[in-house]
Image 1 (tube, rainbow, N blue to C red):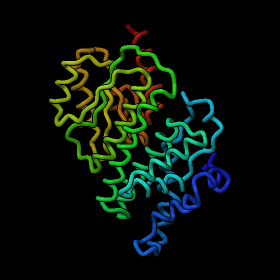
Image 2 (image 1 turned 90 degrees about the vertical axis):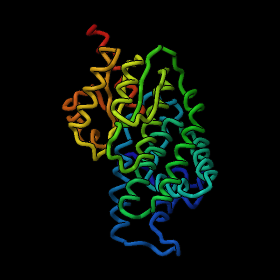
Image 3 (image 1 turned 180 degrees about the vertical axis):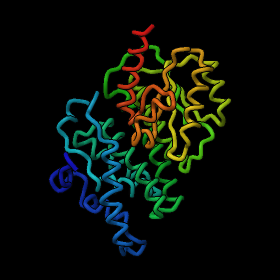
Image 4 (image 1 turned 120 degrees about the vertical axis):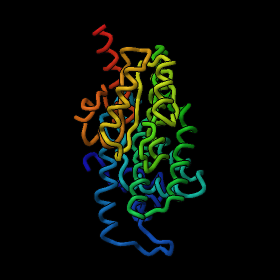
Length: 298
């Protein structure tokens, strides 16, 4: 993968020898013997690099001292996944602190470590490499780490309050096979909007009517919906239409996020939405561009 340096030439001395075997450690049985070699090669060579590519975008609003750092590699993501699945979160926190000590920003860690780790946990579960208990522990720990580092993340860049309000929520009633991972993506987006000075509303509405009631009662400049891969497009389009009809802001923007729209960005216009949230950083840029365009139209 372009831009990724071998671990031995980046942070080996700082992070310790165990980091070198991050991917390999995920593919061992309890007795230390390796699992199916072909499956290991598939995940190590395809699943993890794909996750890294999905979450790797051009830097924006990143502290200057982070520009020169080497990119996170697949071993580091896999090692972090192993740490968050353990029942002691202290090791995962220490791992983050070591990366911060060599100049890596929390923005980079949120986007290039925590977010890909959440996706990796889901993929490992779907191919039966981890059981639901281990993955649930891992995702809960990721949520805890996000809350722990959220205040420091907000102070990494200067931001100004501007009075804009955003609602982030998963699509109500969808057949979400991995609700914790889904919710984690929402939390990442919320952290970026909060840092950019937005008044962030979040929740997990249990029904379409509940979400519609919220946008009818409260003013939002933007509504962000995260969508599971299994959700039919017509269901998403119906929800977007319901939000627009009910919103007390007749010019409300609608942003959607989820792997299905990363793979098929052309679907965004098909469902009547305005923009796609690839990750938290790009979501902010998209939101600013969208609201600027709407302001010029008014």
